[in-house]
Length: 75
Image 1 (cartoon, rainbow, N blue to C red):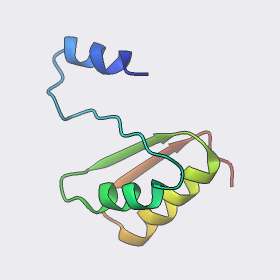
Image 2 (tube, one colour; image 1 turned 60 degrees about the vertical axis):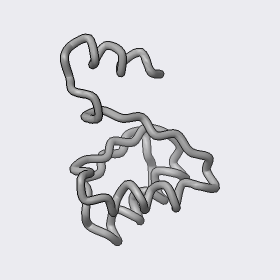
Image 3 (spheres, rainbow, N blue to C red; image 1 turned 90 degrees about the vertical axis):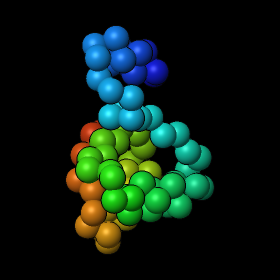
Image 4 (cartoon, rainbow, N blue to C red; image 1 turned 90 degrees about the horizontal axis):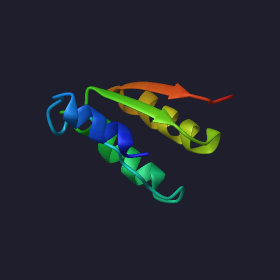
């Protein structure tokens, strides 16, 4: 999972541009809110379970701060 971060570093992408945040399903609403509300977050890309994707989608729609891309999510 973190191999692409190492490739990004080798390619010269500055630290902090790409980040991986992991969380338990139970902590997702809290973690998602913190990320979505942070003024320096311009984009969120998520790949994972439908349940967590729905949580992040709702948070994103409520705060309208960060762009959100979800993949493999069926509503």
